[in-house]
Image (cartoon, rainbow, N blue to C red; front, top):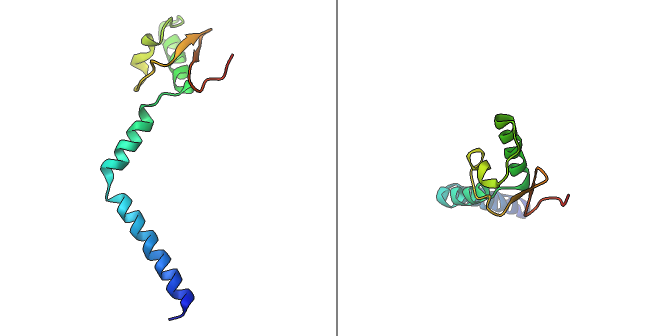
Length: 92
């Protein structure tokens, strides 16, 4: 066997082993995915505002009114001028 063939075989073996190791740890992968999903974004809050307006034909006055439209923590956000304000939001 040539040296290049041995190198390629080792690289493939390590790559497959790493993928298998990650696949066998579903609890950690699920926890990381849930942590990301629990973080609301400015766009998410803006979408909830639009949904609230569509259903109620009125602007929401606080983010607590948006909770039925979202999963996750939106306590860091507030509504300013009909749009979300908080972490990651563009200043208006």
